Amino acid sequence: MIISLIKVTIKSFNIKLYDYSLMEIVKATEAHMKELSTLLKGLDTEEYSFSEEEKIAPLIQEGNYYIAIEENKIVGAIGLVIIEESCEIDALITSKKGVGKALIDFAIELCKKENVKKLWCWSLKRYNAIGFYDKMGFEEQFLLKKHWCGEDCYIFGKVIE
Image (tube, rainbow, N blue to C red; front, side, top):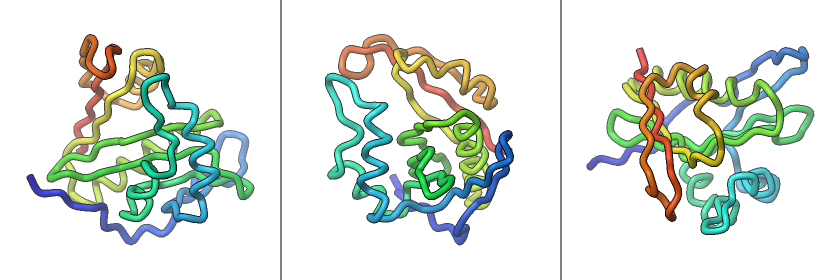
């Protein structure tokens, strides 16, 4: 298995949101660690902590975490890991409507730039994310019962064209 870190020259990705405020998507740095950790607490479960700095640090150091910033505040984050010709969304969380779509659009553009054919993720059923990924065009949806720490998980996949 060949593991390839995301090598991208995109420094930032500017998007106008519906409320007409400007948001920027940039690579996370260690300076963002505490605020990113706080945001990621929204994904933590009783069994696993996504927000621990020791778990976030390697993805930041490898350049695989991107954050959406609005008015100097992190309003969303996405972890992206390219393995061969697929890109896994390691984590996706937002604190504002519209930011999730912007982060997925960013991930799709990154995949196109890197000639990646598939964008995919898994999500705990408790997160109720099926509607979001359906709207984002993730046509492949599979429910895996008792898959992770005894919880049901969905696998979502999108072919990049």
